[in-house]
Image (cartoon, one colour):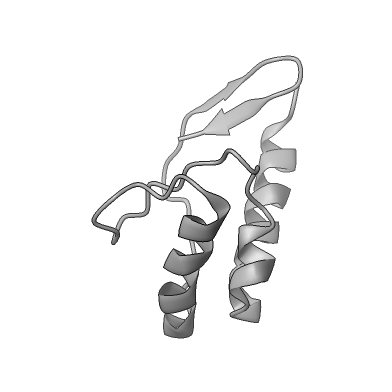
Amino acid sequence: KLTAAQLDAEFAKFNAAWATKNPDTVTALFDTDGVLLATIAARPRTSPADIRDYFVSFLPNSPVGTIDTSTVKAGCDWAVRA
């Protein structure tokens, strides 16, 4: 199982990708069948092209993510922090 520390490291990787302001760098962190439910998007992004398109306009705002509270669910080769 993934630990909270490992999940924290993944979150840090995501923030580091955001800091590049490169939509390709951020999009590469998603699985090819990933879904982005962005807080400021009018619709789910369900393809790599849709996800990239979102980050093209989002990244120039220099976003930084924080986790105030979360719940972790994990299995043998997966984990979700919500």
